[in-house]
Image (tube, rainbow, N blue to C red; front, side):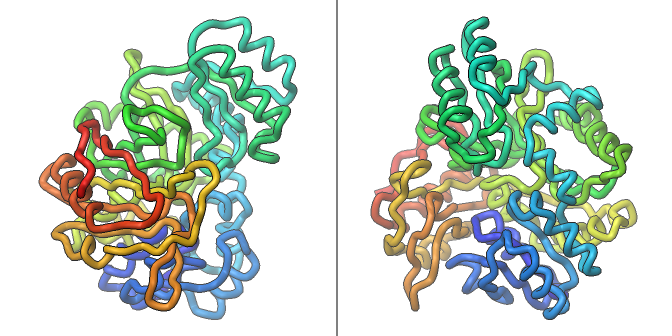
Length: 431
């Protein structure tokens, strides 16, 4: 079987690595890929940008692609899944209409309201003055979100109204995220532990992945600006059968049913970012693709045998027959830590030589996924803000994290930074 994975980050490296391990897969193309996917067995990078819909469809036709797995959100919003499906190529990813669930936070809020899914109280604004009046009327912390796609950086948790006003000015007046900032959501601040819950979905059928938790803030103690994610672990200790059943019945099933009712069935990874409040789980956001860096932890945590093989599930979902397969997914505890450029999430300085990757990958249960790298002959060079993701599997999430942090000691590039408290416990920086 010939598969196309679209994207260039750590998520796509992890997906390509996992899919290539399936006994039914002969070749995985990654467009455009990165310095890690370039050397994975049975994988080949393709120099086509992830948002070049026309060229990707033409390539898929020419190469006889039997399944396309779309990693990032932007090509989904641009309609890549629609174009592939129209060309007769099974695509694992939602249509452009359904991708609005992530592409527009206002649309997601409207849909949740329509199907009774709990989410924070909110208001939507396109003009600055009404937004300023709204936040000035309240007290305490508040959250300001750019409506459109902002690479995981469009959410600002504001401790007070002064911070909220600045965030509104940055978005509506300063156009911080371009068109994505033309509209903002202002919502109540929620408290509680966060949880990522991801399912493989096709219409109203779904197969869940293990629960996971992402750490989005840049600094230890969940301080600093939001990022695309600095590390993750799976499973979360407070997830039990009762909570999982509740999430499925109160969040996943209503959303899938509402999309089906509207004539826009969901196909792909449905990601629910949840806050477990005293009143139960509330949805912070929906993504229409697998999370990053949750994917890196989830993929290394899957069994290597058939019960961890994603391919039968993804192809069945893309073909609308997920209910016929229902293959179980056996997962083990796993975790990952992101190694970022010193300037991330602001101005980064790419071009740094990376050493120690072979030593880290040689450790038991460890896999280093590339997020922002490129190859220069035999060298691996940094090329983005999040550069690497060191993932590990263990007897428990903390055991996996200990393995990941030990492997970080093998890796070096100039300005490298990472959090030492992924999973809640502080780990000494390796020497």
